[in-house]
Image (cartoon, rainbow, N blue to C red; front, side):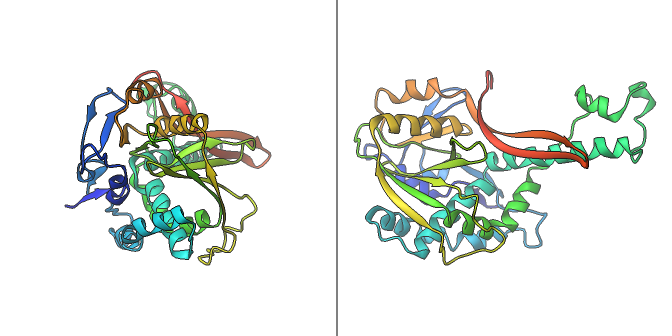
Length: 317
């Protein structure tokens, strides 16, 4: 069984420390343990890209062959402003892959499916379409058992992964037709972090929209601004709706961006410079993670589920 990297090694190598040569600094949020791995040793799951729900259980590996070999060239093009279709496709595809195949992405994708199953089960019971609970559970209903936590719905995380892999090219086209902001960091002692989920979320003035903050190297990151007007029913690989601007971040902006990157990491945070401020900064922001959030609205026809994501504080790990 192969060791599959859910964050590509070509991305992690960009954060190698000059002091360590072929390694990078790392800290786990869960226990603040520091270590210095190489890209081969982290963000990997044995057979992680294999998905039995798909006709071709290794389908995503074919997709990655169009992404990983072009990653370094794509970053060079972003840096000098020579952005072409291949560059957009490569970076958007890298982001789509992380969102789809990382443990964080699969966990987040399981949340909406769990809510759908629970809501459908409650509706079915109300219509008399479910059998009564076992007598051993007492005089109760499935809805009550669900509400009280006696019964839980568990989603196989490989199922949302399969859904994501099946639509990964469409997702790539969507990301590539949004507005990109190329974030340049010129602070030598304060580089961008990356992580085991390097696709942080950022709130906007519109509650329907979450920007994506994606570190690409110690001095380069992206802010991707979704466009609600984009027609997502058609995959436009000419990227006709793509636009970008460059922005040199201030130190205050850099702190806020790194805060988002750390808080949205699942556990491991990676960086290239072991400066004195780094470990206290990670320790301060470690009790957060991205979670799905579903708001249920009762309608005349049933229940409307509105799903989004939040970086929430968790008090224990």
